[in-house]
Length: 339
Image 1 (cartoon, rainbow, N blue to C red):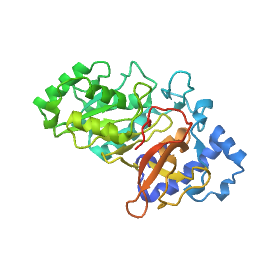
Image 2: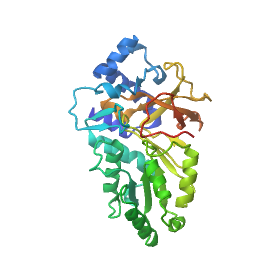
Image 3: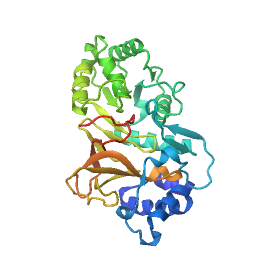
Image 4: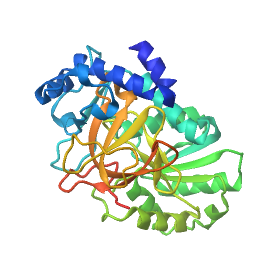
């Protein structure tokens, strides 16, 4: 496993398919739940030669089964937030150091070193929600930033505004990452604070992680971004695409188009046939299937309930848009908005 994880962290696009197929064979044999899923489908492992031929496991399996490859010692259980009365997903994690490495690598490939940031989080603190993969990741980002100003501020917006003002009035060359759940950022934008000083902050990045969590009415992503750009004086609002069941993240630099990091690939499936995967340049909305190589200890081939579209750059689409969610799918914390 350690050799495979080293290869995952250092993965290049030219080796993605090869490594994904190797992980598929491993998980088909060593992951009891995924293996049974494949068996019930009548899958012959010797006939799987391309990623598009791999059956993707429905994400709902994380609610009712322990998804684990091999006999790993569980170090943490990440759990989705859900809403009252909903069953929640549980992601068993045996290698937290690997998760931290993957998350840091993906972020820094997109935005640069964490040591060049002040990380201000409009999220529950780690002490309040230590079973959230997002909160765990941001806690690690805060520590790696090495900034005395970094921290969680969800329940103390006045202190957050004071910190933002202090950083803007005394710039030190670092970027300011204001990262939060959507309802938290909207609440801050509408709380009546004088935020005009932010309009002169060229190093400010505002990033929403999605999620109204029943706190506010659902809004179109475009509508949300219009509110936030006006309030915070930024040209664009960045977004993060991640979920409890995955260990990799996609980031959008403000256009609503998400980049897939080296450890992750998105395939689109027909909305009426989960085993029909669209070809790379198919211009239709489809269900999002995610290959997450970082999920080597659980399942790397996840059929989500999100809807998306390919964005075409070069020969293969390495970017995608999230359009919304399937009807009647559970409300989740990561993507409650539509474009």
